[in-house]
Length: 161
Image (tube, rainbow, N blue to C red; front, top):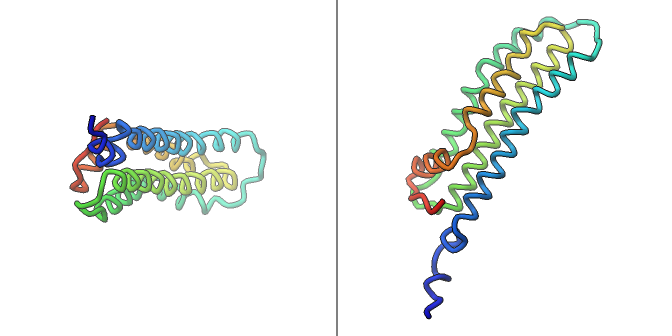
């Protein structure tokens, strides 16, 4: 039996797609935590009694909350555009993770700004970023199809699932 064929195969082919499974599970944890974290903090903020002092923060928080998904989607597209067609699947999976983390991090920062603005103004409009962050989490929820689309968009041939 020739074992050379198994060792010459790329790592993702030898381990039956374990790299893809790891990529998806890691991305799912990040998206879940990034979507639910601001919701939990907004719930906690409802219980905190602070005299409203800065209503000027509401409009910027609301506007940023509305555009945060657009920023996240654009950030993801920029990372995918930087991948070369000669990139391997492992490099594409790493870029998929970077794109997912970046989109959620930007959205979470904006959502947390909205929570702080709500704390300092007591106006629920400031919490739009929390809602859009939760929606963004659902919109970019990592699936096999989304990973395949990301990898294919970079010009890389998807490997086994």
